[in-house]
Image (cartoon, rainbow, N blue to C red; front, side, top):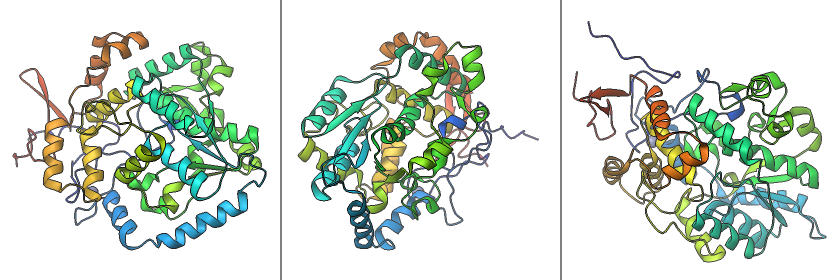
Length: 412
Ligand SMILES: [Zn+2]
């Protein structure tokens, strides 16, 4: 009897693709990064129902047919009326680094709903030059901004650990992106924080979008013993890796009781306003001087999403290794749902670009991290789950692909 290849990290052993987009059931749900352990215990993945429809596709349908957007906008106006400060002081925070989403968020809040946003930036680990220009141009269109650069040496250590232990080069960035804005809000007595899309737009359980508040599990903690960064326990980071508590503090969420006391609301603007990446992109070009990347992003066909951090390209490559789905899959899935491309076109794009190795900034990134390129690739190979990958004549092949061209797709 042939033994079934095993699945790492709690991944569903049987790979299934959505019949309507190109995502597979290997796509992980967003989790609180500070609870992310090496074994990914408790991880959950995209649900696909018996008709072959994934939660992200269902969500897209809901957005088109079931959600009363006029009603949602009324809710937003009511909220803004309640919190708007008449003296012009900051009444909300828009976290971001000047990408298309944060440009759109700050613009509509300020110009359409009369709010006084403070923009807060946890900068990319390694800014691209065009990403930095977009950031400048965003602020120059009329916003105050607080950028918080954490200690670069600590950032480097945490990113290196997250690659070694989790193959997750973007974790330290994500931590700051979620955890720093509430702390700034508390300092300035600002009660509202508006992120962009809801997690459900990407396939997290639909229940998450039936309310505007983001789950506090993403930005609070109650016991320091529960905290992991880069796959290491907080106490080990302090004792074994010699990272000071003060430096780690910048990456930690707020304590639950302090958060409660501050009465801050962390919201997704995508709950109130219909969010279409392409529309948001056009809006940012027109109103904030946003410019797309001057060339195609490696691993996909698009030029305007997640372009400000050199490490981001590598991040998408690691999702391809860990889950068998790369950057083109994420982009195509979104565009199929918004009916900009057909599923067949999406499959072609995935086959052409998914998993393309992002070599453009690779040397710079590994030099910055002080890891060798071989170390990175060795780490990748450790994270290839046997149920997804097989080695054939010295090269790695996916067992299953959305276009049914995987090594095991035609085997019974
Ligand atoms: Zn789908």
